[in-house]
Image (tube, rainbow, N blue to C red; front, top):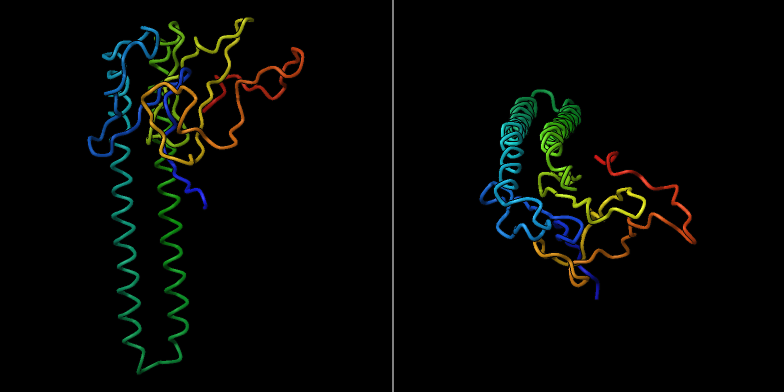
Length: 228
């Protein structure tokens, strides 16, 4: 029997706290959070303040996406309406022109779709850039406690709080948290530290393997600060 692939937010682990976006409440869910998840380094009030700041930055940009969707729908209806009207007008007087109108209609639909996709991508990039700037500003305060906010690829579906203090090696270097952004084979239960059961990604490499063999450094190691 085949395994169903479900794309969802990764679970909270001992290295990363994951705050999933609540589509109904239109905010990041912090109901599960307790200071114990970060070793008492951040209170619930601080977490809510940061997430509210990020959400307030994201909200005006998100309204642009709604406008883009509305324009996309109107453009589709406009193309269809013009095509039907033109087709009726020339069906009797110039039937030889019908193939050209069909080609023009298809080209118009493709153009509308491409413009919409490009617009949405620009909005998403703007959202991530501005929200990352907010996260970086708050990281100036959180860094002294070994905590760091991270905007993932799938933002705003969720946002992550990296616990750098958990992954400091003996040499005093920080290693990137094992944040998985790949599809999961089952619905993950975020909000509870991962104990090695349930919601695990399949065939996911371990990014914490900073050393290979007998103490040989991994040349593919990427410092966390270079992560987007």
